[in-house]
Each structure stands twice: as structure tokens, then as C-alpha cells.
Image (cartoon, rainbow, N blue to C red; front, side):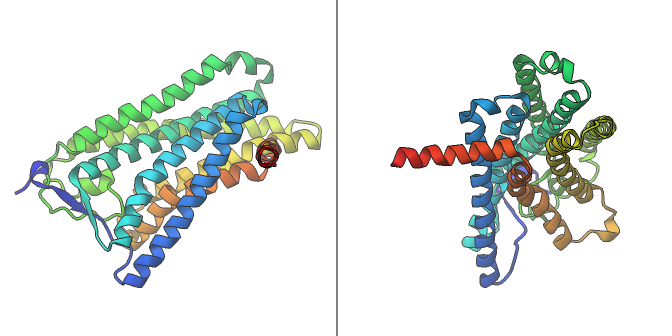
Amino acid sequence: MSNGSSITHFLLLAFADTRELQLLHFWLFLGIYLAALLGNGLIITAIACDHRLHTPMYFFLLNLSLLDLGSISTTVPKAMANSLWDTRDISYAGCAAQVFFVFFLFGAEYFLLTVMAYDRYVAICQPLHYGTLLGSRACVHMAAAAWASGFLTSLLHTANTFSLPLCHGNAVDQFFCEIPQILKLSCSHSYLREVGLVTFSAFVFLGCFFFIVLSYVQIFRAVLRIPSEQGRHKAFSTCLPHLAVVSLFVSTIMFAHLKPPSVSSPSLDLVVAVLYTVVSQALNPLIYSMRNKELKDALLKLFEDKLLQRQ
């Protein structure tokens, strides 16, 4: 029987066995990673530099882009390096760090998406109280609470998971370290404490989910009562990108961790994990900028200023 102290490294799930497919995976992930860096970096720069975007909605969007950059940088570079160098190794400390940052950043992102749903609810359903309920201090406090909640939850889960004795080898059935896969390596009955924490987190997750759903029920009821078509279009244009991001994020995570064992397989788990850890972080900037005229104008102004500076 071995425990965590005797394990010096873990073996991650390989994307492919042949060298050609490994290199294809490297270049594909590199393209997605660069797209995520560029898209989120442009959103952060545009919001930071354009005073017209210094509003609660864009402040939360800036935080979301920071979380997306952090989460994709936690998993993708290591996966690319393993494919490039034809290895599966990750150190024990590296695995623990990956578990911590994945749980921290994804937890903070989910809490932030809940806060963003509240922002849209107040903006559309209680516009006269928007400045009072979502002043600059309140926005900072809510964003800080989202980051702090993700941090504390992740710290608790990571410390508890890596205090468990591991008796079933060191092969992780995923391309990055995550808590459910580490628990599969733990000794019989020793994982029940972490299962209890996961259950509590699941109730918090569902509570946030129901809050988001309830917020959007109220939002759509309010939007449908707007008499002008232009007003309805403007309201929908600010809500639909957030709803699309929430749907992609929540649906993939729920499918990954709540699907029945009968439909589970390593290849399916791998594809779903790629969707919520890689693809969504690259798509979020595109989703938010596609129907957002203010953000498009800010990015255009940013490019024009750069061109003028060069001339």
C-alpha cells in the first residue's frame, strides 16, 4: 500500500499513441491557446483603456477574461508539453497545483457568472436602482467575493484530497489532474470525507444555478414587456452572450460529472473535459464581442490609436 508521500509523480492520460497525432494535438491546442490569449487579452485591454466601458457589466467581463486566461493556462501548456515531448508525467507538486488552480479558477468563474446574472437582472428589471445596488464599491466587493469563494473552496478541497492515502497507482484518467480522478486512486472508504465536501459544493453549485435561472426568467418577462422592438433588441444583446457562456460552462461541467456510468468512457470524458477547460475559454471572447457594439467600437478605437502611434 502506498500513500501520497511515496508518490513522486502522476501519469496523465495521453491524447494519442502515434507521434503524428501527438504533434497534431500540440498544434491544435497551440492554436486554441493563442486564440484564447488574444481574445481575452484584447477584451481586458479594451475595457481597461476605454473609459466608456468602465461600467459594472464590463468590470465583471474583465474579471471573467482574467479567470479564463488563468484556467486555460493551468491545463493547456502542460498538455502541449507532454504531447511535444512524448511523455505523460506530471510531478506530485505540479498535480496538486493543477488541482488547486483548476478548482479555484473554475469555482471563481461560476460565482462570477452568478454575479453577472444579478447585474443583468438589476439593469433590466430594476434600472432605477442600478446605480445604488451596483455602485463601484459594491461591484468590487462582489468580484472579490467570487475570487475569495473560489480560493477558499479550492484550498479546502485540494488539502483534503491530497491528504488521502493513494493505493491504486498513479495513473490519472484525464489530460490534467482533477479531484474525481485523484479520488479513484484513493484507498477504499478513505475518500468519503472528500465526497461529503463535494456534495456540499454541489448544493452550492445548484443554488447558484437556480439563482441564475430565476434571474433570467424575470429578465425575459421584463424584456417581453418592453414596447419598442429596438429596446427589446438592446436588452437581449446584453443578456444573450452571458446566457450562452453560462449554458456552455454549466452544461459541459454537469454532463462531465453527472452523466451515468453506462455512457462514460475515457474518450468521451476527454472530449467533454476539453470542451469546458479549453474550448469555452477560447469561445467566450467571441461570444461577448459578436453582438456587443460598444466592445467592437472600443476594440476598433484601440487598433486605430495603435496605428496612429506608429505613423
